Length: 218
Image (cartoon, rainbow, N blue to C red; front, top):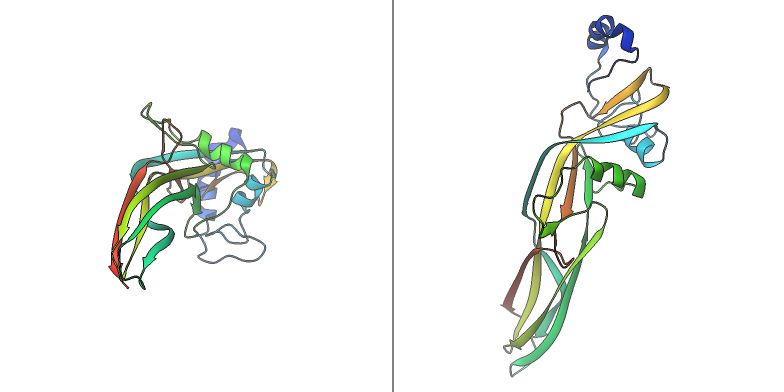
């Protein structure tokens, strides 16, 4: 973690003092401070950004890429376990995904609508016209499957979304000193401690991904 100067006129003199005063990040948290990875001697900047308690919050993206995410089963399996003849079906499968945020070691940390916009504002723009993403929105994908399930078998669908992964850090400014300083960098300037995974959308608004169908013996 690095602390930005609180008095711009004395930055040179403060730099050495701040370097000597830095305390290593705590691996635990107390009830008074819920931001993952910070101790009680540091403000809970994520809570403050979520609840409008800071003058400004800015997300700085340091790394980003797109990849195929994990498969998750969609809907209930099609069951013909007790049947003696093939079972015909015509079913529609649908799945929804939303942005997942994590800070340091914690996963699926919720953020407010306003803070979501701050995080989106710090992410680099989409690189193509056919694929887009927006943090904080729910994106859906669906498909219709027609076919038959053999007797004594079951089948099901899985979906893996393409996700845009963003890593970076949050710069927070307070109008009054908070724990001794106006500026805080979470979890450190230039770090990748804040992670945002956002489903990729196609031009028609549907979620980009791959469907997988599998059958198995009952």
